[in-house]
Every structure is written in C-alpha cells, then in structure tokens.
Amino acid sequence: MRCLTVGIVLAAASLPLAVRAQAPTSIQAKEAPKAAGKETPKAYVPGLEQFMNLILVEHNKLWFAAKARNWPLAEYQLGEIKEIMGDVQDFVPVFKNLPLAEMLDAVITKEIAMLEKSIEAKDYKAFTAGYDKLTQACNACHQGTENGFVVITRPTRPAFTNQDYRPNKQ
Ligand code: HEC
Image (tube, rainbow, N blue to C red; front, top):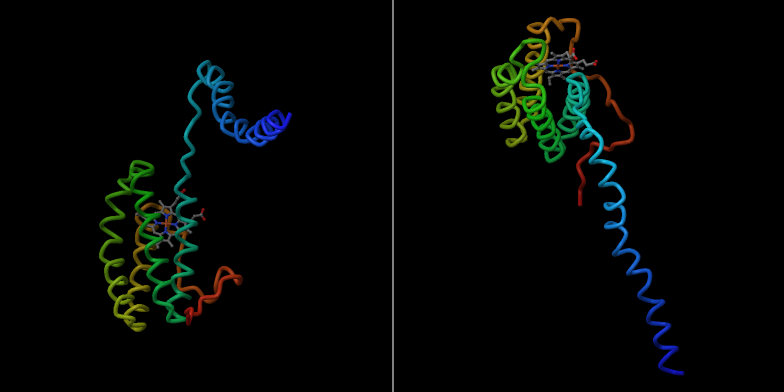
C-alpha cells in the first residue's frame, strides 16, 4: 500500500514534466504534414523606408547621448546605426536600380569612422562636427537617389521622453 502511494505520487509528479517534454514533438508532428503541402512561408524583409526610419531614431538618440556626455551610450547608438546600415547592405543592396550597398560604403564609412574617433576621445566638439558631416552624408544620398525631399537635420529634442540620456554614475 505504501509502495503504491509512493508510486502514484511519483507518477503524478512526473506527469507535467512528461507532458512538457512531449509538447514540442507533438506540435511538430501536427504541423509538419500541413507545412509540407503548402509553399514555404515567405521570409519577412523590411522595406528600405523601415530601415531608414530606424536609422532616424538612432540618429536622434546618438545626438542626445553625446550631448549628455554619455559616451558609452553614444558608442552604442552609433553601433546601432552601423548595424542597420549593414542590414540595408545585406537586404536592400540594390534599390530602384541604384547600387545602395556601394553608395552606403562611399557616403558613410568615412563619416562614421570620424564619429567613432570623437566618441572614443570623448571630444564633444569633434563629435558635433562629425555628426553634421554624417547628416550631410544622409542628405547627399537622399539627393542622389531622388529622395532630396527627405531632409535630415540636427535634432532639437529627443524623439522619446522615456529614456534618460544622462550617464549612469554607478
Ligand atoms: C546610401 C544612400 C542613403 C543613405 C546614406 C541614407 N539614406 Fe535615408 N533613404 C535612402 C533612400 C533611397 C530612401 C527612400 C526609401 C524609399 O523610398 O522607400 C531614404 C529614406 C529615408 C527616410 C524616409 C523614410 C520614411 O519613410 O519617412 C529617412 C527618415 C531617412 N532616409 C533617414 C536617413 C538618415 C538619418 C540617414 C543618415 C544617418 C540616411 N537616411 C542615410 C537612402 C539613403
């Protein structure tokens, strides 16, 4: 009797685990035949304007990070801009017959390297000069791709008010 109780308790205790362990297999087993009969689902590739709007947000944040002398954050934001530009090169290398990937290299690489140096040196004056150069490069490409109506400037206020740009003193 005692043995039986222990057995039942053990079985009950192990049940949820067994169910959890089996769950992925049973979902796969159910979905596999369905998927096999259909076309492979399309991978979602964001449009260029979505990448650009993300770059716009990072461009805004970068300014306020550096303005607050939060250099680690500035480095991070610039890194994000680079990453998104890398994504553009991977996902939208050609846009309306324009070699966007190569244009990005030509227009942006120098400007970003300059900004990186200014952030590393924690040199705000060099940063503002580099930031303006980067912004000019944004606009040069917009003009060169018949998007001259998209004009980027130094921001006058943060795009978001729920992020604190001040350096973390800890
Ligand atoms: C290599 C060329 C190139 C560079 C460099 C570039 N852009 Fe763009 N950008 C474009 C193109 C092309 C479009 C138009 C996209 C479209 O028509 O879908 C665009 C559109 C935009 C838009 C409009 C998106 C919208 O839907 O409102 C913004 C904002 C933008 N860019 C921001 C920036 C910023 C900020 C930078 C610099 C940090 C930058 N871009 C650098 C090529 C570039």
